[in-house]
Image 1: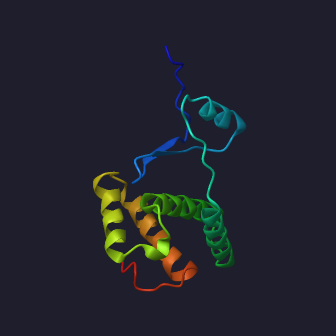
Image 2: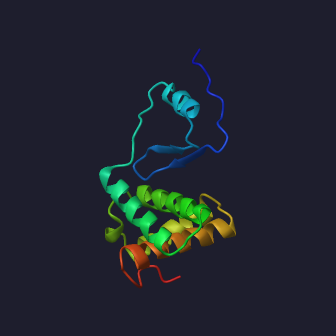
Length: 138
């Protein structure tokens, strides 16, 4: 019998378009050890491209005086957004953004406030970090 791993507080499991599951959890050494004990798991760190974009996003939010909680929420929303498409955000079309937002409502059944926060994070990415206006018309 395979060992069971207890659910971690704050655990998030998200499917990606590439047929994988993305798991997020609060960083703590014990949590890392428990996740790494899962048979067949793959441990993937942020790619260099994701790290660079995350750093740009973080810097821009700090410069604009965003609170630590808002910065964390936006980082998480944008990481899920980025991994949903698995391509450069500059290659994502307005139609794809709309489809992603509908995916959050219809399939993920996120709350109204979570949906609005996702929209705000996406607008922030395109308008303030990538300097692309009009792509997220909400």
